[in-house]
Amino acid sequence: RAVRRKNGIVTASLAENINAVRVVQAFVREARNAAHFQGLGRDYFRAQMKAVAFASGYQPIMGLLSAVALVIIIWFGGSRVLNGELTVGAFSAFIAYIVRFFQPINELSSSYNALQAALAGGERIYEILDTPADVTDAPDASELPQIKGHVEFDNVVFEYEQDRPVLRGIDIEAQPGEMIALVGHTGAGKSSMINILQRFYDIRSGSITIDGHNIQQITRSSLRRQVGLVLQEPFLFSGSIRDNIRYGRLDATQEEIEAAAQAVNVHDFIESLDFGYDTVVHERGATLSHGQRQLVSFARALLADPRILILDEATASVDTATEQLIQEALAVLLRGQTSFVIAHRLSTIQAASQIIVLREGEIIERGTHEELLMAGGHYQELHAMQFKYGPAAEAAA
View 1 (cartoon, rainbow, N blue to C red):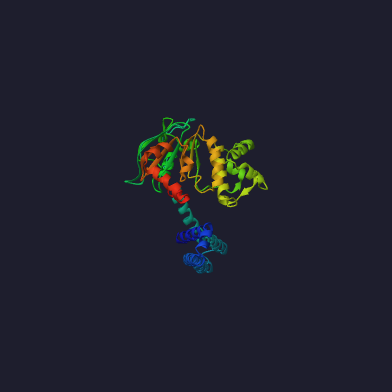
View 2 (cartoon, rainbow, N blue to C red):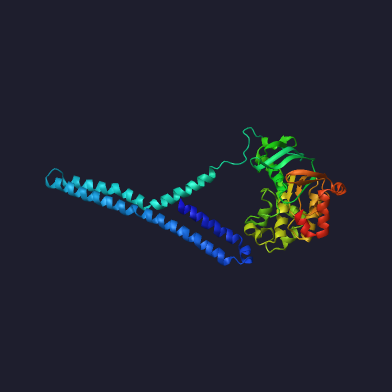
C-alpha cells in the first residue's frame, strides 16, 4: 500500500509539472521542482526496496521448508524401506507427492510481491468506486420532456459546507428565450448558480424548476441533455475537430457540423487547415490558440441544440476581434433559447433581458442595462470603472 501511495504521489507530481511547464519555466522553478521530484523519487525508491526486501524473504523460507520436509521424509521413509516396512515404489511415490505439494506453494511465494501490489492497487480503485456520489437521482426521478426553457429559482439557498451558505434567497425567473446575465465580483456566487442549475450540486432549500419540473425530481442525464455549457477555459479532447464538434451529438451530419461552425465564424479557419475537419487536435487542444478552441467549443454547444445555454465567462479570455465574431453569432443563435451568461465584460451583456447583480451570495440589484445605470447602484459603479480604467476594470466586474 505504501508503494502504491508513493507511486501515486510521484505520478501526480510528474503530470502536474508537465502540464504547468510554461509556468515552471516562467518563474525559473526548474531546479527547485527537479529537486522536489527527486525527493519524491527517493521516497518511492525506499518504499519499493522495503517491499522487495519483505517479499523476497518468502521464497527462500518456503524453499527451506520444502527441503527440510524432503530430508525428513527421506530419512524416515528410508529407514522403513531398509526395515522392510515400506516398499521402494511406495516410498518413491510419497517423495513425488511431497515435491508436487510444495511446488504451487513455491510458485505462489515467488509471485507474492506482484500479488500484494495488485491487491493494494485494487483497494485504491475500489475506494474510488465505492465513494458515494454527492448528487444522485431520486428513486422516483422521471425523464425531463422536451422543454421550452422557462427557468425559475424560488428562494434558493445553497452551501458547499454545512452552515456556510454561498447563495441565499435567490429568486429569478427566466422566460423562454430570455438572456439572464449574472454580474458580480469574484466569489459573489455566479458560478455556483450555474453549478446548481445543472445539478452538479444540490441546493439546501428552495427549488429550481424548468417548465414547472423540479430539477431534483428529474434525472440528471435528461436535464443535461437540454442544457448546453461553454466554459471560460475551453476543453477539447484528443481527436479530430469533427469529433470534438459533434461530441454532444454523435449522429450529426457533416452539413450540420459545418453549419454550426459557420454560425460561430470558425468554419473558414477549420477549412484553412491542411486536413480541414479531420485535423487532429492534441490533448486539451494544445495545437490551437485559446480563441480557436473557444470557437470550436461554441460550435460544439450549438450543435447539441440545447434549450438552455450557459456561457460561463466564455468571452473573458478572447481578443477583441474574436469576441466580436462570437457576439455576432450569439445575437442570432440565442434567439429562442434561454441563456444564462456570466460576463466580466459588461459590454457583452447590454442586450440581456435581465441583469442580476450578486454580492456575497445575495441579489442586490436586477433589471435591464439601462434601468441599472439609471438606478445608480453597484452595477453603475462597475460600468463606470470599466469605461474609466478599461480592461483592468472588466476583470474586476
